[in-house]
Amino acid sequence: MRIAVLKERAPGESRVALTPETAKKFVALGATVAVEEGAGSGASVTDEAYREAGAEVAGAAAVVKDADIVLGVQAPDPALLAGANPGAWVAATFDPFRNGDLVAAYAKAGLEALSMEFMPRITRAQSMDVLSSQSNLAGYKAVLVAANTYGRAFPMMMTAAGTVQAAKVFVMGVGVAGLQAIATAKRLGAQVSATDVRSATKEQILSLGAKPVFVENVAGIEGEGSGGYATEMSEEYQKAQAELVSSHIAKQDIVITTALIPGKPAPRLISDAQIASMKPGSVIFDLAVAQGGNVEGSKPDEVVEKHGVTIVGYSNTAGHLAADASALFARNLYNFLSAFWDKEAGKPVLDEEIGDAVRLTQGGKVVNERLQAT
Ligand code: NAD
Image (tube, rainbow, N blue to C red; front, top):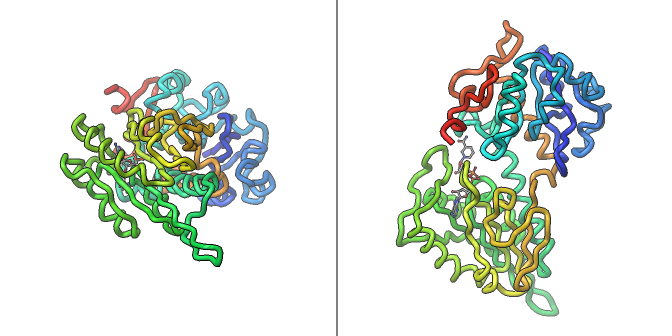
């Protein structure tokens, strides 16, 4: 089994899909591991460290030649994989709903694309879930960036020169990123409130010592729903949510938005009029900016000033913590492949529940049910 890892080529992508730790573990399973020169540089991993872990380090073509499995953070251009074995697996993120052309190109190239975003939300796959591992770090980073952008302090401070008021932080969307954002803002000493459409999050918000702010007059999503994901809300709910947010947001200093709906553009949670109601100097971090944005006017990787409010959002927030993000991403991939490693066959053999969920292409065709439905 030859496992190949290329340097990421997407603009701004600093992460890497393999660390020396996981290279060593794959070698221990009996695999040969090959890494492109400089692949770890954005995540502070040297070629030497990969070599010490037992990996070959070489140019892209040599690394990919005869590969059975290619690991990536963002799926590489299939043209780079021409030397891989027929039917080679590529385990990476594909953003499949938005990258139809890429998925089709993988099918055409006879590669088996395994989309890590489609990992099912089941207990045994938790350690394989890249969305969770990356969202957690993104939620943390969003709060730090907002704090750094904000011209005031987060904690209340009583000083000889007078009292500094605690910052009011509002987190919209309390999934993995939102929970970490709440925890991080609390640790920095802010007064934190949070909202979501899923009623199950109310208790989680309270358990972190934050205040839940919820639409009460229109039903939201009860329980965890399908895999814990949200769906698009009714017009009536959206209207009630907009009213609730309008009255709350005007009193906030920092807003962190994290709301996503799989396969759909991010829901719009903050309008221009609502931004205008905020105090000058307030900061909004839009974690959903790359998926269309929760905030009107937010732009990926740009600092937007509107009505005296600063709006920030990164296209790749986890990539701003490249070393930790890579370490967790690489472990997710290792946990995935090693869980299915068949010792006799000397290679991983996927089961139906997880294999069918993540597999996008096979035998020259797009085979994933979720893509065929769209
Ligand atoms: P996500 O990134 O898809 O969405 C972020 C949050 O935005 C979610 O909480 C969602 O409910 C919320 N949201 C969507 N539309 C909204 C709106 N209009 N207004 C306000 N909020 C809105 O979600 P996620 O972080 O991936 O996780 C969602 C859930 O899945 C969490 O409860 C998490 O604990 C669970 N989860 C389970 C597993 C597992 O069992 N393997 C793994 C990861 C996450």
